[in-house]
Every structure is written in C-alpha cells, then in structure tokens.
Amino acid sequence: MNKKYIVRSASREYPIKWYSSLSELVAAVSAQVRPGDMLLVDSNADKYYGKFFRSLFATGKVFVIPSGEKSKSFSQYEKLTRALIRSGANRKTTLFALGGGVTGDLSGFIASTLLRGVSFVQIPTTLLSMVDSSVGGKTGINVPEGKNLVGTFYQPLSVHISMEFLQTLPAGHITGGLAEIIKSALLRDKKLLREIQKAKDAIRKRDPEILRKLSEKAVTIKADVVSEDETETGVRATLNLGHTLAHALEAYSRYKGITHGEAVAIGMHFAVRLSASLGILAIKKANEIIAMLRETGLPLYLQEYSTLKKASPEKLVAIMKRDKKNISDDIRFILLDEPGNALLPQPIPDTTLLTELAKFIEEGNK
Ligand SMILES: NC(=O)c1ccc[n+]([C@@H]2O[C@H](COP(=O)([O-])OP(=O)(O)OC[C@H]3O[C@@H](n4cnc5c(N)ncnc54)[C@H](O)[C@@H]3O)[C@@H](O)[C@H]2O)c1
View 1 (cartoon, rainbow, N blue to C red):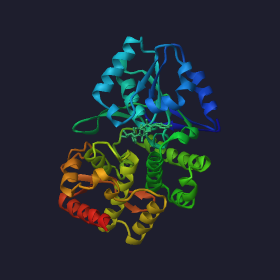
View 2: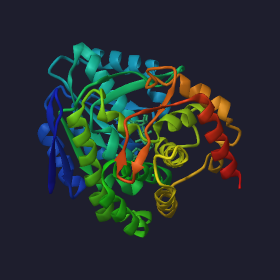
View 3: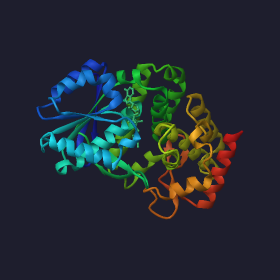
C-alpha cells in the first residue's frame, strides 16, 4: 500500500487505502476478513475478479448482485437481506462490497439496516466508485418515483482501492468516472483543473499512474467536504454539481444507454452555461471550462445519446420537480461563480429553466 487517507466524518473515522497492485489489495482484505463475514459482489466484478476474493470467504457467504442500476431496488434489497439472514448473518458480520456504485450503494443500505446495522467495507471497482460513491457514506436504492429516494447515511469501516480494476472497465464508465473527477476540481480546486487539462491524452489512454494521481486528489476533495458536512445540511450539497439535470436524464432514459457519470458530464455543462446566463460566472471563464470538458472527451449534449434525443424541456423539468433535493417548489442548481468555486444550491424559476433548457437543446442540435 502506498497511500492512506483518513476520512473524519462526525459519525466515524475511517481510512481510504490505495494499493499499487491488486495482489496487495487482496492481501489486505484477506487480513481483514473474519469467519462469518460475507461478500456482496457485482456480477461483472465477479467475472473478472471473483477468483481473487471468493476464497477469502466461507462457503455460502458470497452473494452476486446482477450488474446494472436496476439492482438498486426494493426487490434486490429484500432478496439479498433475506439471503444474508438465512446464511447466518449476525451483528458481528462485516459485509464486503466488491463492485461499482450500484453495489456500494445497495450493500451500504443493506448494511445500515440489517440487524439495525452491521459493518461494511467498500472495494470499489469502477472509476466513479473509486473517486466518489465509495466515500462519504451515502447509501440507497431507487424507486419508480425517482433515483436514490430511499437510503441512509452510513459510513464504511474502510475503503480499499486499486487502479488495476480499471483495466477491464468499459470506456463509457471511464468517461463517467472522469466526469466526477472534473466535478471535484470545478468545485474546489483550480489547480487540479489545470492538471486534468494537461493530462488529457494520458487520461484517454487510461494511464494508471495519471488516473491514480487525479483520483487521489478527487477523493480527498470529497472526503474533506464530507468531513465538514456529513449529512448534507450545507456545503456537501455542492457535490451535486451537474446532478439536478443528470438525475432527470437518467430517469428519462430509464437508466439505459447512458452511465451516471456521462449524465453528470452533460449536467455539469448545463450548470456552467446556466451560471454564465445568470451572470454569476464570466462568459469567458464558462467557455474555458466548456472547452476543457470537450477536450477531455466528456459528452456535452443530450443529442449524443439515442435515449435522450426526444427529451423536451417540459418533461425534464417535470422529472426534476420530483427530485428529493428540491426542498421547496423551486428546482435548485449548484452554480459556479469561478472555476474551482461552487455556490450553495440556488433556486431557479421554472420559466428560466425551460428557456435555458430549450437553448441548450437547440445548441446541441447544431
Ligand atoms: N453514494 C454516493 O455518494 C454516490 C455518488 C455517486 C454515484 N453514486 C451511484 O453510483 C452508481 C453508479 O456507479 P458506477 O458508475 O460505478 O456503476 P455500476 O456499479 O453500475 O458499474 C458500472 C458497470 O461496470 C461493471 N463493472 C464494475 N466493475 C467492473 C470492472 N472492474 N471491470 C468491468 N466491469 C465492471 C458493472 O457490472 C456495471 O455494468 C449510481 O447508482 C449512482 O447513483 C452514488
């Protein structure tokens, strides 16, 4: 292991550990597993990496989660929870989650409710889960009414990261993870934005060293924010930059054909344009950010996805209205006043949003 970072949230302190190889990570996990502990593993992560982890757990203590957002559901929650209980889960059981954000969010939610809370460990295998979802303790599932509408704040015992998992990750999910790294930079770190810009070719080639360096910085930004505000009463809300529109895009496309991170990339692009239209961010600075998003290969417009081609401003606004983060009638957006500085959620009137979304869609049609 060559790096460790301690997250200090109000409810728990825990380490994020980066390993220079998968075998080092497996050895560390092996030392942490006790008899009776259980593994929840994403089906694709199992296909590629199950052979390294399954033998660490006793027979009957490994549970596979079908790949995909549809697993963040009540039915999967019920199925797994009951299976864990039948297999002898008790209050000393630790659940190990091996997979992307879907596995982490679902396993964390199960861990937080099973027997009123058992420990869990995150082993993220996608770039997005390494830089974002495995840290901070948000767990949850989706319901037909919207994404992540049922969940808890529940911190893991530890997070183990190796970039070696990324060798098998489909390209769209590298782009998605990169979007969340850029988000962290846009929120808090102008210097990291410049580093990302410089490293754009290496990023496209998945240079593990570069990805690792950028990821470490992004994670520490997230961990700092979470340490300041674990349960999102203030500054943590800024982590939702790009997410108001992203969640609507995902829901509109029924979680198919676009990854969460790709939707966040389009959502960030829109948030930057909105910040400029409202006179909060200088147009020159907005254009610089947009050029950078383009250069790093992130998707910018809805039209890049067949499932979103027919999305209208009216429909997207209706979906956003249901979002749980809208504590008033207004839809709220995270806006930037500077690259590297985000404002707390700002209410945006529906009329403004409809106009800006129409402009955004028209721009994408050009
Ligand atoms: N809790 C949080 O704070 C937080 C933050 C951001 C996002 N999220 C959630 O995270 C989820 C998205 O996470 P994600 O992008 O990791 O998606 P994911 O978990 O669906 O994984 C993406 C795909 O990659 C596959 N996969 C995983 N690891 C692999 C590997 N190493 N090699 C090959 N294939 C692999 C999976 O089977 C899946 O098909 C969303 O549900 C989102 O809401 C949560």
